[in-house]
Image (cartoon, helix red, strand yellow):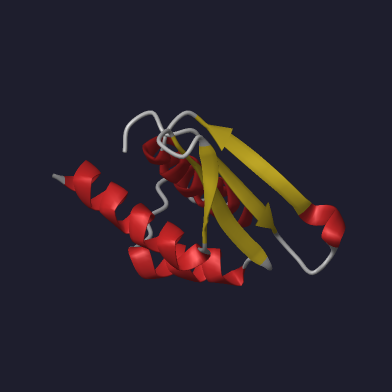
Amino acid sequence: MANRHTIILMQTSQNKATRTFMDYDSISQAMDGICGLYERKLKELNPAVQNITYDIADLYNFIDGLADMSALVYDHKMQAFLPYDREWIKQKVFQHLKKLAH
């Protein structure tokens, strides 16, 4: 799974102008990026709170609350990007955070 170029495609609201992407060198970096995106949103919503904590359900709600989120992950054998949905992203984020906790 290391060094698999990953592009996260997302749309934050129904407005198509909110479509954007985030580009990473690996799936792990992409999952870090998604967590960072959520953490920045929490800080924006709670500017007076210094230490913000959240659990996986909160992160899942954030991901589910987006109008759209998917991933394109490069497959070296096929020499193509393979698409994955938000459920796959939630699985990978969970595995990533679990690995960081141990």
